[in-house]
Amino acid sequence: MAEQDLAPIALTLDHLFLEFGGLSVLQNLSLTLRAGELLALIGPNGAGKTSVLNCICGIYRPSRGSIRFAEQQLVGRLPHHIAQLGIARTFQHGEMFQGMTVLENLLVGRHARIRTGVFGEALFSRAVRAQEILHRRRVEEILDFVELSAFRHRPMASLSFAQQKLAGFARALALEPKVLLLDEPSAGLNRDAREDLARFILRIKHETGIPMIWVEHDMQMVADLSDRLYVLNHGEYLTDGAPKEVLSDPKVIAAYLGGAKHEAA
Image 1: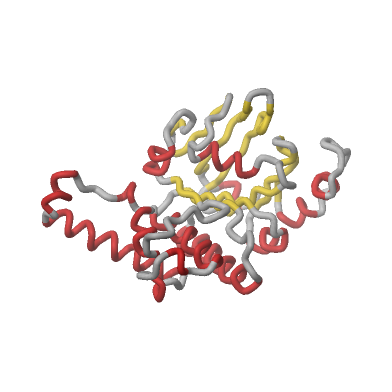
Image 2: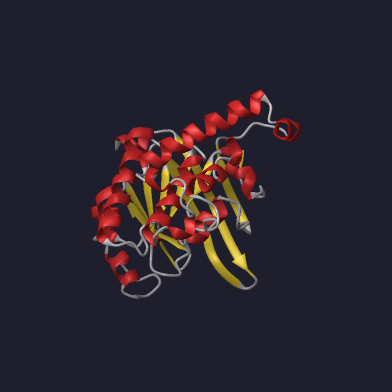
């Protein structure tokens, strides 16, 4: 048994279904994420990968099934309540506040960690000042981690596409998550930017141990970085396992090449 299989369970999806009207998006999906694991969620376009992340973070409400994190049932909770529990995510297109600075965008990402009240904020009390210093210091550390410190006071709109994607990655880290959901963070990046991203993902894995579910289309990246691949096809589980084994599986190859939904192994 692999060492990763002995790690505590961080997140569990159990018999998950997602339907929009008569359209079935996810069908009887079960998935386990273990502590410290980097799990890559892969599959052809339209397989339902982003929908899985949307269910976990509360953007979509599953039709049936269970999502459990830290003994808490997530199905039915609002997205900001799920964020407060410690689940953060990135988005394919960044979704940053373009008129705000990079620093301000990351401070928004710390909203669930701020412990001040309306009256204290209005009076700018000593406790509020102490909190502001604390949160700004943490944001500066994260900016340094992703090598964006030089852009801290720049408007987000002035950054390049790659820098904005990296800032979105940093904003998710600003929550200090217990689980991190990455939705195609490398999409649209050139080779150098992808290499930087890979380096940051590995640093998170090895320095913080935050478990991650990573939706990705770059098969070379997932083969090099992930602990395990979980494959979706047409909203259903296809297979999972070590990257080398999964990527050489005839069922996976057929799915990516447009083979039959349940082509024989």
